[in-house]
Image (cartoon, rainbow, N blue to C red):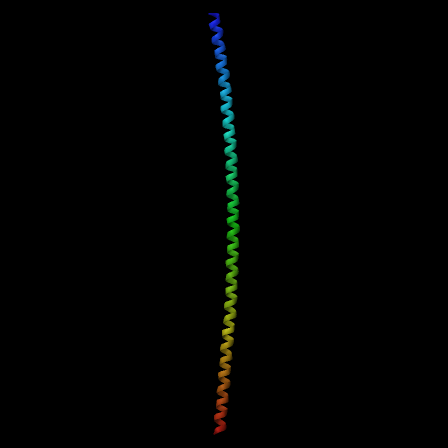
Length: 110
C-alpha cells in the first residue's frame, strides 16, 4: 500500500509539473501572440499614417498645380483681353482716321 501511495504521490507531482510546464508554455505563447499582434497593429498604424501623409502630399501638390494652372489661365485671359481691346482701339482709330481723310478729300473736291 505504501508503494501505491508513493506512486500516486509521484504521479500527482508529475501531473502538476506537466500542468505547470503546459501552463507556462501557453502563457508564453499567449504573450508572444500578444506581442506579435501589437507589432502588427503598430506596423499597420505606421503604414496608415504614411499613406495618409502621402495622400496629403499628393493632394497639396494637386491643389498647387490646379491653382497655378488657374493663375496661368487668368493671366492668359487678361493678356488676350488686353490684346483684343488694343486691336479694337487700333481698328477704331484707323476707321476714324479714314473717315477724316474721306471727309477731307470730299471737302477738297467741293
